[in-house]
Image (cartoon, rainbow, N blue to C red; front, side, top):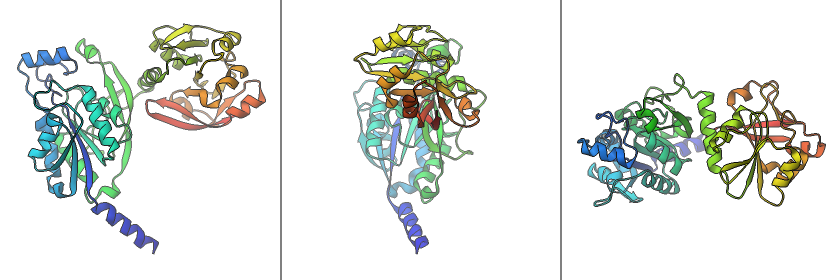
Length: 392
């Protein structure tokens, strides 16, 4: 009986109507043939148009949508308004509902804000897959708008270092058809890197790639491209640099942030505009360092009566979070911020090298050690974390 129920559920899942999000970045890739290394930014777009650039994204997106044509009677498409996907999908015979703004007749050039808004609207509507045409900049914007939605990129831009892209427009169409067709219930997924490249640096001949986050993508190795970073994988330095950016961006104004010691923490301190101390504890407020190499007494004064958080790394090989090298962040400080006020960041490699595989605390106060014990989320990259056991 149980197997019959399971088969019935699978049959129902396979036969239900699917909802696909579609976002086309109309200007993506226009600067490629002209050697502009991308089209991000109003000035670069102006130069591309002045040099005779023509849109490439719609044609490449159409090649992907051709693979979905046999499923048109079973698929609903939520598309970005006008040139951001709705016009194209409608012209190909799909049933389309436009969402977001931008891309309409008489509208100015689309921006990343339009992509983020459209993606957010699609996530709110619960699309099964968000298909987008663009490059790494578009991937970043779509991910920011819909971080919890499965993504699939139609390669259209100049730079496509992210792992969210299919190998070609046709490959994207084939993967999308698998993801929403009869085989959908058996579709496998994985976490794929979304990379962030600085186009100005690229134009100067330097590749400055950072990990922006991890999106849920189809596991189709023959049809999807790998992430281009560190020989086909995101190395620890890139992951931690991206994580440092994300942590600084998430810092709430009016909250005092106590920053521990070590190389990982120094990345965060440098993102705040200062050098910070490698072996000391520093303090940040409202996006800048306000105190460096502080002792416990000063820390207690700085967090008195205000919201506060503690951000620390992990001692390599030992797994200590508190009690080794950062004794300035003592029981008094930790009692005030509480367990929920502690953020731990480190590389994934450092965690996997621990034997036994646990973190340790030794604050000198058994009560505080007990408060910190249990399982704690450790952040290893933007959008990626590992639950680790903490032992006193």
